[in-house]
Length: 265
Length: 265
Image (cartoon, rainbow over the protein chains, first blue to last red):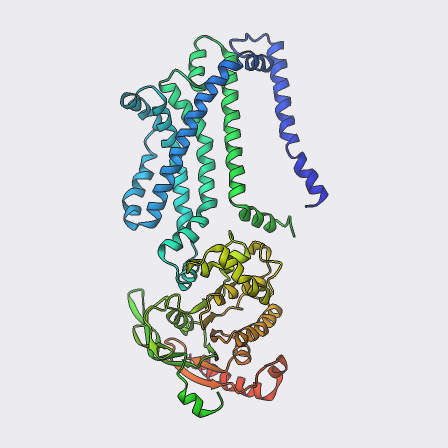
């Protein structure tokens, strides 16, 4: 990497951050100048103040939402992988289960959430199920694509080396599916926060989504904003975490990308 | 092999009799290979040439065990073999290196498939890594290597299993002219030194003559035996031979039937 590139890379975040900062200052100034009441639109400084003053309350609700996402997303990973492996390995499963999985996404999850309350109650379980239902789909569909998009010549090469079908699966198909799988994971983790909030809105007594619905009728608008801020921060951090794991798992993939874009050579 | 008596007493390494193969194309059966007779003595280097579509790659697929003939006999060392997968080394034009494995781990793929532990296989292959000119590159991913290097790594993967028969399907087809020359010379040395019985499919007449003990010319679809040419050039061979009179005589013998076919069609 050249020196110029290094500088370009390290300064890449300055411009978007600058724009964001400018918008926040503008917001602050306009609200103050227009005497907008705090229950209608609080200033950024008031939201920051709320984040500091109510940090204990906000943190405890953050942990609840994080737990829902953690458990729900893990369940989505396990079911997503299992279904993808089954579909890629068995023609019968591909013909029978795959269409059902695709059709399942036409059901509005928010509409079946009330049913979940009837079946499993108001605790952690319905939120976990909603997160899992929403997240398993991009993971399984992308992983299936990755498991199946293999050069037939590669398979022939494996066969001439004496590989069994299982060895083709573990040594060729699974590694080949990783970039696809991570695309699914990144999509899934991005919507996982939304899924958890939906679960909390429909019925619950904990979590940042619940805090929003609870604070809104009381016109604790700064608190609503603080919760929204924490939710989007959570989404960003979870996404970054997924990207980090992606890099750790597939160093070869990002090496190749850099070479192809001419950064190393 | 110049002594006729040893030829008679020596069992051919590969012996093919009246091999035929048809494909079902658009509902019509089309004959691809018809009554092919073919033999290779132990340690020989034999080339198959012919116009595109003459079925030479199909023939190699059949020898490798990836496909079955409709009729005919295939014997290795005088024994008829039905399941040839894993029995012979097979290499294609594409290097088919796995992007997620380093050069070293790509090379040991066949050993791992045979059940050798990764650690053991890595140790066992280091000597040949050196001999194949890949030392110092063994821990790089294939994307960082030149075309010639990648092809050598693919060769080594094929050679490492210790099979005595090596089938090569236009292995230099994707390389530039200079790299190709280098690789041809290198391949000649390796095959002689490792005492492999080699079958090369190519459409390059110079390449076939320079490398082979015998050249099989096939007709266009369906592929039949057209001409069998013994290449009497002494070994070790050199590029100066290419411009010699003996070489051009041999070349003429191959060119004439090829031209006739082009003229006839």
